[in-house]
Image 1 (cartoon, protein in one colour):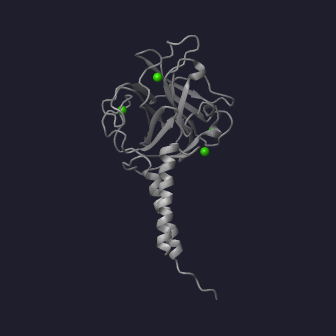
Image 2 (tube, rainbow, N blue to C red):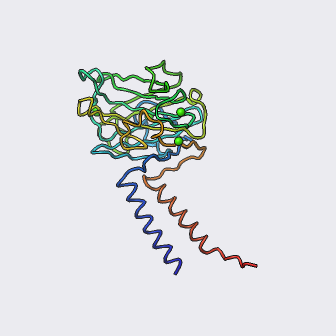
Length: 274
Ligand SMILES: [Ca+2]
Ligand SMILES: [Ca+2]
Ligand SMILES: [Ca+2]
Ligand SMILES: [Ca+2]
């Protein structure tokens, strides 16, 4: 009887978990696990091999007609980020558009003290890459000023931002589209167990600045949140190696464990009061 009820609850929860993952993509202002990297990353803006990113947490972000897959992991020296923008097959570059120049690019913002705030402070960083011509992009580093982002700073040693249209090893979409990889040096930002974080890509199409499209984590579109650490998620650093899982498997596994715990609790014999 109780087991039957448990099974019914489990099936319903599992159903809704899948619905959450596939219909909404991500919860608002979530947490992302940054696991220990086993497979080395070549920061070249593409899947260098088909296994390069399989040992990492994955977030699939869908917004409007656009989809980006985000993956992240670390090796205690660097944090590595992949933004696989599977639906962006045309490069809009900063020199192309006049007068206001929307562009394609990607970045991670990090709140190193995880203290939020309504504007980036001096412990907050932005590391990004932006297309500047059909064949060139540049890397950018910014730091919070207390009221906004600084101008571009000299890029710290070890930081790399790279992008390409090379989808030859891409497990999601084999036709050419924009892929970004970032490598952030941990010594530069300080080693923490939790960072506030946001990860996003821009698409300069359609080509007016007002329409510059943002897609990212934790929100499907974080244009406003880019300036607002209160709206960022939590990036949890762990030594755990994340096994290869399809999207959604983690939430379903979590619910399976939670349901099992509820079942154990139900089955626990009651203490007899004295
Ligand atoms: Ca690579
Ligand atoms: Ca584009
Ligand atoms: Ca901060
Ligand atoms: Ca936080």
